[in-house]
Image (cartoon, rainbow, N blue to C red; front, side, top):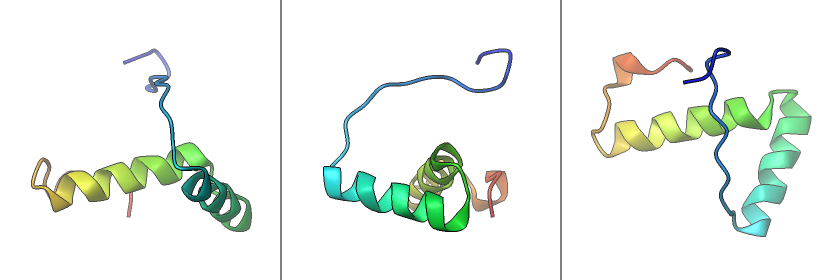
Length: 58
């Protein structure tokens, strides 16, 4: 983990999903990185990698 608590990681996305993520970010004024954190947490809970109580986002 970096000093700021964030790690940069490059990946690729389906262009349509990325467009929708950007639209959601703009509409909600929530940074895309925070939305991705929430989505990853939800995925980890779904596959029992982490407990719902461990989530940092709502």
